[in-house]
Image (cartoon, rainbow, N blue to C red; front, top):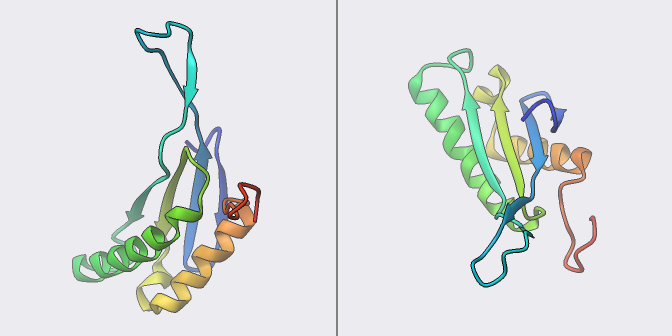
Length: 117
């Protein structure tokens, strides 16, 4: 993902992103057609962030923030959000600001008309 994707670093997290299209064929139409997959997100929270309780708290916060933003992403977008040690002391609002800033830097958001936001 990191070879063909992009990344944006913030003080408390790093977002890696790649947009992929998958090729599929059907029996009715043997010609290859391109389909998109729904946006998806994964999280990496290492032991450097804190003990298990702290890591799970950070993961829960990031999951909630990311799920609220998935609808604004292009189809086929795959994200990996890597939490850095300062994320342990951050509030949900601060993590949300970092996530939004990373999305803007990566030009991930799509407006209602299908164009870039």
